[in-house]
Structure formats: C-alpha cells, structure tokens
Image (cartoon, rainbow, N blue to C red; front, side, top):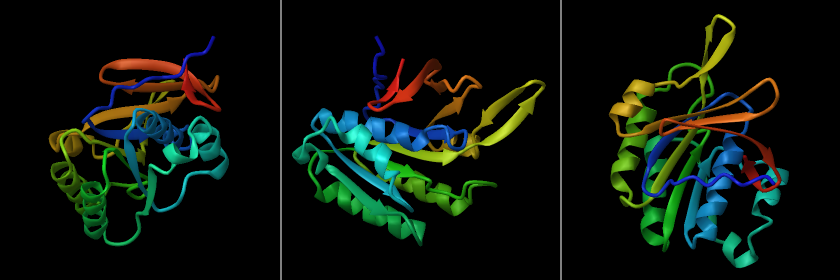
Length: 195
C-alpha cells in the first residue's frame, strides 16, 4: 500500500531546487495540504496559479472551510514590494504556518542578487515558527552518465540561512527528494507524493 510523504517543515527555511517539470509545484501543494490539515494557513505567492487539475486533486481531501485557508498572491513586479505584501499578510492573517514562493525567480541563469536579498529579508521578517519554502528551477550538471540537479545560488542561500533541497525525476518517472541528508524516492498520485 502506498503511503503519502510526511515532511517535517515546522519553522524551516527551504530552497527547493527542482529539475524542471518534475513536480516542484505539486510538492509545494502537497506541503500546503499538510499545513491546512494541521490547522494552519498557507500563503502561496507565484507569478501564476498552479495547474487547476493538480490543485483540485490534491485539495480534494479538504472541505471548503479548510480550503479557504489557502491564500494565493500574485508574485509580479518589484520583489521588495512583494515581500512587504507577504509579511503584511502573514502578520494580519491568523495561524499562517507556511509561505510558498513558487517560481520566485527566472527559470534560467544566475538568480539576481536583489531577489536573493529580498528572500533573505523575508526570512528575517516572518515569524520563527512559519515555514518558508522557495521553489525554483535548478541548473544541471553533467557528470559522466549522470545528470545531477545543480541548485542555483546554493552557497549564498545557505549562508542566508536556507536549507537546500533538491527534487528530480528518474528515467522510470520516480521522484527523488533530497532533504536534510535524507533521500526519499516515490511517485506522484492524486493525493500528492507517495512512497
């Protein structure tokens, strides 16, 4: 029997570096459902809403009252103003336990220093118990026959207090999440990530 991944995120600051198209947004939604089921509230900031089909699959386990604790915000324009809006929402809404910034930077190239400065500022300004999850596309590094996920701006984000997690897909369509020195292998179904 498949078991849903349970991730301990309480108060963590995470940069999830994702091999493009392998489920980064889905993992963010998976974590959002977990937070809401635990009684918390989620702030989701992105330039676009998640895929409607995937969203409704993952959120089908929530009733309408629970689902109302998911707050989507538009992440477009001046990053510093976006951070101010997220901090204001976190301070004014009760029980915010998770803030997700999905596709918070360009999908290729070096992450601009002003974006990194803004997310480090956000990390410092939110409550210590609130989890901050940044999701962005990774670079790739080819080592012989292996293609490894290469987190962009890894050193500066680590220095800024973020854990660096990676998510990639195998040739057999399994998903590999490396977090806290742990390697989880699974796949995606309608409820999210499963072993």
